[in-house]
Structure formats: C-alpha cells, structure tokens
Length: 372
Ligand SMILES: C[S@@+](CC[C@H](N)C(=O)[O-])C[C@H]1O[C@@H](n2cnc3c(N)ncnc32)[C@H](O)[C@@H]1O
Image (cartoon, rainbow, N blue to C red):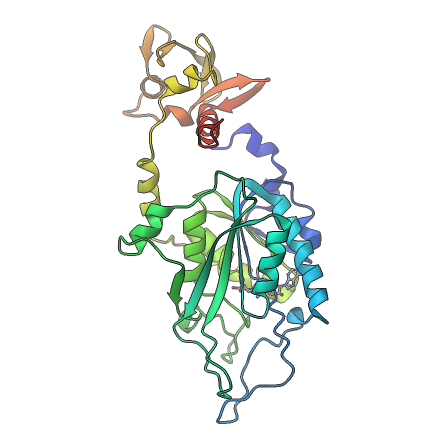
C-alpha cells in the first residue's frame, strides 16, 4: 500500500537502483535522515607494492585494482572522512551503519567514525574458515576481517536489533561477535567464462545476511556506497528490503545488475522474522486516544474513502453507521471479510493529508521508547 507521504518522498526514486559515480558526490544527492541501514565495504588501501607468488610460482590474484590505490594515509583519511560524513547525514536517526575492513584500514576508519560522533555497538570478527595462507611464512595467516557496527550517536535510543531472530538462527544461543563464515567460493563466486573472478573482493552472502537480518526490517532501505558486485543488493532483495547501490565502475554495475535481476527466491529466515514481529507487545487503539494522538469524536476514513467514515469513541471503539466495534472489527464488516488489520486500513486527516493510523501507532511506540 502506498501512502501519500511515500509518493512525495524524494528517496523513492533511488530505491532498488545502482547509481553510477563517486560515492561522495552521489551521497550528496540523497536527502538527510532517509536510509535505515548502511553497509560499506570501502577500499582497503592494501598498499601492495610487489606481485605475490605461491610456493609453486603461480601468481596470487590479490586486490591490485586502481580503486584501492591511495597516495598516502592522509589521502585515505580525507576520503574516509568525506564519505562517512555523508553517510551520517543520510542515515535516519533510528538507523545504524556497518563498515567492513582489514587491518590495513579498519583502525583508521574506526577512529574517524568515533571522531565524527558515531557510537560503536559492536566490532564483529569475521573469522574466515578458509583463509588464504601466508605463503612466505613471515607472519600469522591473516584469517579475519572486522566489521564495525555503529549507531549515529551516543544518545540515540532507538535502533533495530533483531535479537531474538539472531538467537534463533544461532541454535537458540545468543549470537556472539565472532562469525565463522567461509570466503566467497563455489557457485556463489561470480566468474567469467575463463574462470576469472568478476570482482576481487566479492563478500559472502552469509555475511550480508547476518548484517541485514539483525539490523533492519522488511521494507527498510539499505544503502551501500561501495556496491561492487552487488552482494548487499542481492541479499536485500532476498530478504525483502529495498537497496540503494553506489558504484563508480560501469563494469561492476553491469555485473551487479544482472546478478540481482536473476534473483527470484527469498531466504527462509524471512518467515521467522515475521513471527517475531507478531509477538511484539500489542498497543491498544485506546492508548492513542489516552495520549492524544487521536481524540474522541475525531473522524477516521476507511482506505481513504471519504464515504466510509467512522467516529472515534472514548473507550477505544469506533462507530460506523449504527455499528460499534474495534477498528479491526468495523474494518472487516466494511470489507465483508473474516478479519481486517484496522491499523493498516484506517486514516485520519491531519493538515489536509491522509495519515495512516499505523503511522501514529509507530510514532507512539517510538516516543514511548525514547521516554518522551
Ligand atoms: C571492496 S569493494 C566492494 C565489494 C562488494 N562488497 C562486493 O561484495 O562485491 C569496493 C568497491 O567500491 C568501488 N569504489 C571505490 N571507490 C569508490 C568511490 N569513491 N565511489 C564509488 N565506488 C567506489 C570499487 O569500484 C569497488 O567495486
């Protein structure tokens, strides 16, 4: 169902698209406080100088791409400050952000995030169950990458964390901050006809599944400013979230688009999330009257139809013609069905605009959680 504000919301034109360009410029087009979740897999600044060979003399295909090259740490930091500032601006006040990186960049990025006002919720260790060996034997095998998960500020009270769902998919044990996930291999790895990787740093979908499931809800907007092969978009689609991708290389945009277009199935975790939502504490319609979100005597309209109107009564019921009942009961009488979700069908007019009753319920919930 589209409600009026959605039609007028300028973010909607970017939903489920990949925008070509430098992310700092593209982010500047996106309105303030408009996305629910950001996942960013920025350049690592690996500073690879020489080619690396295995003991059998075959060349290692590491990250040698131009997009990963910066002339100095200062240049890298300047870039990181600019895109992180923009991310903070476009993130909703209820949103969170994830950044993934290796030891080459993640500490710099973490410091910059703290300086910009982000507040760290977790640092997740992605433990690679099949890491690339240290061929020279000069250091430990580098088997981890870090994901920093932050809210916008220390004082932000509300953000999404689907705790129960994560516990459920973790065999009914609290999920910890070390995630054992293999590198992206096998059928999931995108390759050309000669078997070459289509993107040097394609992330495993399992990683994005945990990120998106834990910190967003169905219908939310997930933005990725370094979209690459489109892993974020692919998983968002499989979990019924909206995505916005930004990528500067046309070739990767092409790869990501065709990957996402082919998706026609959803992940099974979706149904678990729906069940969790249903068990959230119920808010009675009367609570909205008691707290003056609506008032006794106000008129509400079924499906925005001005002919189908009811009056709000003091006790939380509504009166439609000569019938009295809950918003759900009267809704089901009007549409001649066994049941009706009144929250999603009744509207009230405020400032000449139809406002869905469920929007007032969400506002009530949010303000209660924020202790207003
Ligand atoms: C580490 S990769 C992301 C890989 C992605 N997570 C995946 O699973 O395929 C970083 C991507 O960001 C892109 N990129 C680098 N700098 C950029 C910039 N300033 N603006 C937009 N995209 C950029 C690169 O072309 C590259 O595809």
